[in-house]
Length: 220
Image 1: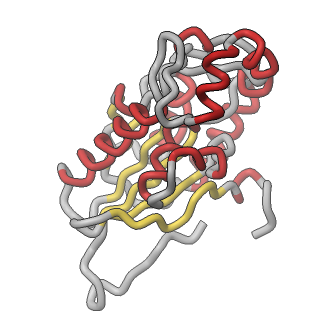
Image 2: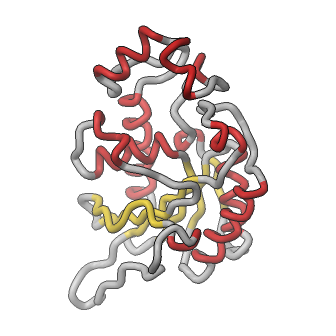
């Protein structure tokens, strides 16, 4: 993967954020709602974590931040093994959307088990309140606040890796790309997808989204 390079004479330094989705879990393949349920990586997920870790092994890093959920922290630990001098911090702000009563259920049963919420979600996913959980808007606001906090608490030119979750990333990119949240499903995130966002001191710039060449998903 080629990182964005800029001539320091032509442009001021930017802080870079490599936002990484966690590796695969058994519940991903079974299409069950995970949310905050703390499911570890499955064998394929560990292989994916090793692949993305090798991809990022030569990238300079000042800090690694991860959701504390196992699937994210295990992925982050694989990455951190190549950066032994870099601190790894767990931050609840990067946890997946709280899916409450949906967690553990199968996607195929969603409409049957939660008909009222299903209709509300189809009408407006931004504000539909997950039974016992968050709205997608709340998840997005939490993610934006977390990213802004990292950007403003580190000097320009820093480089950070953040390991987090699919719904959080999709909602975050809607904000960064100024897209309505109803389009969140258009922003896919394969397991261990890599996304690059930069910060120039005033605003964020989306450099690329959902890169999965390290998995052999697309020809380079």
